Length: 132
Image (tube, rainbow, N blue to C red; front, side, top):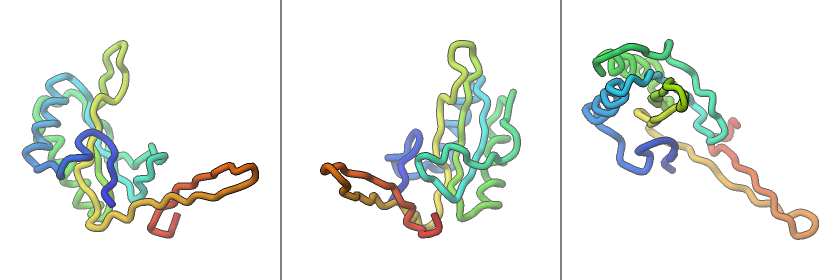
């Protein structure tokens, strides 16, 4: 099962050149780029681990690409994503976020439905890895 979170998640994985082009797009707009990784991509897990500090005031995507490759090498079995934060007044939010690495096997999730009193349905999302 392919996890679909962030921009481009329904497309095939981006090539290095495509990632670099997206990073350059962010830098050209003055957005701060950060890199994060996790082994738990549950939709409610919004707190992925930061890879270093956010990269401010860069003009060239090469610096970010080096950090992306270092993170991927250090965490080969994790999901790795790139975030671009716009600090402009009135926005102050993540403007672009996309996954640049996925594990070889994505475990996915299972939806459990339970019927309880009064014909009420209860749903629970379970991680297929079994550890969660």
